[in-house]
Image 1: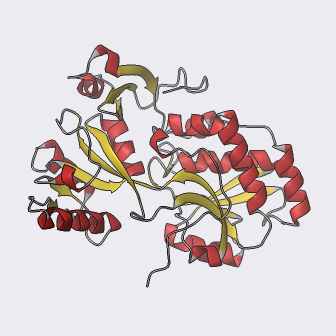
Image 2 (image 1 turned 30 degrees about the vertical axis):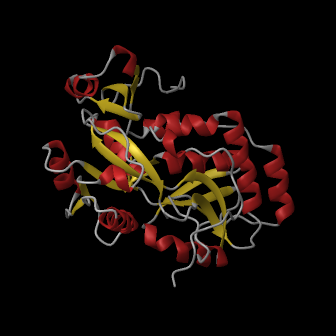
Length: 340
C-alpha cells in the first residue's frame, strides 16, 4: 500500500500495522498501545506484514488529502457547458457522513467531512477550478436536493440504476462491491460461489440483496444435495462482530466498503471474496448531478484525469479501499435494471 508524503508523521489515532492476510488488507489502529497491531500481525509471516502507517480521523485529515491543479480540458468543458454552480465559484457537493471510510465527521470538531467521498469531491472541485463546498446530508435526501438546486453534485456511494438515470447524469468512480469477511486467523481463504458456503454460518442483513444472493446459492446447494449455509441475522453491528470473533458464525456478508474499514481499524477480520452489489447484475458507484445540466462531462474528465495520474489511487490507498478501484470513469454507464 502506498502512503503519500502528507500522511507521514501524523499520529492521531495511534500506530497502525497493515498486514496482507489471505488476500485481505488488515489495518490495525492502536489507541495508545500496540495491542491491536500485535493482534493484526499475530499468526502472519514476516512477508505478510507489508507496511506501517498512521490513520487520522481528525479535521487534519482534510488538510492532508491529495490535491490537484485544475484540469484544463475539464475547465474548458465546464465553460462551454453553460453550467452555473449553485454558489458562484464553488462546487457544492452533497455527502452523507455516516459510514466510514466513505464519509464521516471528524472526531475533533464533529463538522469537517472526511472519507473517500469527501476526498474525491474535493479533487473534482480542484480539477474544475472551483472552491470545494461539501454539505452533510442524510443519504435519502440527496435526490430532492439535486432536483431542487440545493447541491451541484452528489458523491456519496450512489449506485447507478436505470431508474436514477432518468433524472440524473452520472460519472462512475468506484466498484459497488459486497464482501465476505472472516476472522483473520480463519482457515477460510476464498468464498466465490455456492460451493464455498456449504455448511457455513453466515451473518447477513434481512431483506438485503446479499440475503437474496445467499438464498439463491442455498437453493443451488440443496438441488445438488449439498448442505446449505445457515443464515444468521443480528440487529446491530456489535452483535455481528461478537458472533464472528467468538466463533459462533463463520463469516459475514455485506457492503464491502464499511466491512473493509472495520477490518482496517481492528485487524481482526480479512476479506475472502467479493461480488458486485447488484449481483447477478453489475453497476458502479458514481457521482451524480441533475440530468442535462452540463456538469457531468467536466466531472468525468477530472475523474479520468486523477485515475490516469495516480491521485485516485492515493485516495483509495489512504482509506484502505483499493479493492473497489476502477480503471475508467464512464458517463451514464449501464445501471441496475428497474424493479418489476
